[in-house]
Every structure is written in C-alpha cells, then in structure tokens.
Amino acid sequence: MALQNITLRIQPKEFVSIVGASGAGKTTLLRLLLREEEPTSGKVMLDGIDVSDVKRRYLHHVRRRIGTVFQDYKLLPMKTAYENVAFAMEVAGKSDEEIHEDVPQSLDIVGLADKADHFPSQLSGGEKQRVAIARALINRPDVILADEPAANLDPINTWEIIKLLQKINSLGTTVVLSTHDKEIINNLDKRVIVLDKGIIQSDKENGKYLL
Image (cartoon, rainbow, N blue to C red; front, side, top):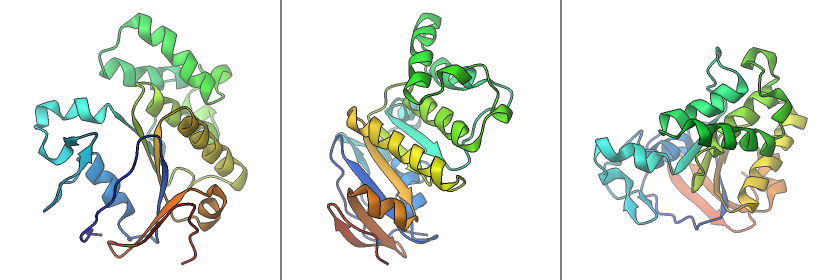
C-alpha cells in the first residue's frame, strides 16, 4: 500500500504503535525507515539524518541504529540461539571478546540464558521471538521496529513479547510497534497512529484502536 502525504514525528524513548488493517501501509512505513523502499517525495529522517539520501555504501551505518523484529522470526536454522544473536555482532565487525560478553547479557534480558545452546527447532514460537528480540538489541540500537511480532503467537506468549518490548522501551530504546491487534493496543495505553489506505486517520497519545 502506497503512503499518501504521511507526516509524523517520533520522539526518542517513545513507544508508538502503528495500527491498521492488512494493507493499510504499516509495513511500507517500516520499510521506508529501513530504506528497503524509497519515498517518491519527502524525507525520512533518523536523528537528523535523511535516510532516503544516505549513499548505499554507508547505509549499513544507519541500519545498525535500528533493530528489527519480524513475525516470522528470521532466525538461521542451523545456528543456536547464542549463534543467531552473535551473528548480528559478527556482521557489525565486533570482536570475539565483545561477543562473548554481550550475547549472554542480551539472552538474559529476554529470559533465555538457559536456552543459549538450543537450535530454533528446539524452541517454542515465543522463545524464537525472544531470540529475535535479543538479536535486535545486541548492537544497542536507538530504535526497535517490531512488525507484527506476536502475529503467530498464542495469547500468553503474545503478552510476554509485548511486556518485553515495554521493558526495552523503559530502558531507553524507542519502540515502534506495527500491529492490527486491537486488544494489544487498547491495553498498552501508549501513543497510537492509525493508518487506513495509506493515510493517517488519527494520531493520539494514550490512544485506543476502535476502528
């Protein structure tokens, strides 16, 4: 879905939910932030940097400031939980010493210190998503983008993931949550931006999703 005349500002350390039915433009908005799509007009800014204007060879520097969590986890099946998280640090050029120190801490934050040696096939859906969140956190991003992170989870695991995102936000990381789940939104009591057919229908603090 193409976005039309979208203008919004998300403050540092804010927790914002982008909501709307399938096809409303939620994923397109996140892809613009990641520069996986480019705007036909306007700017996409991250802390004063025009993401849409960054040269391709420098784009990885911008993307390292953004952690991403997807509904299908995107874990590497032949790597353990530890190795999946470590891989994100390896790609970023971190040293073995940094990896050995930071990966256990990240897994501990998401409550999976005891599952470090487990492969994705040995983990539940909720545990896989926790590994994905640990991976998103490992390079200490300014922003976490969570695209329907609980779409494939049962209600109990859904709320565990949402609580984890709230915890991460409380520690100072900006969280942008994309979802169509009314119950999640209406219990968060955070800012809600409602998209419909590529247009912002409402943008409210402590909002509810009533559509």
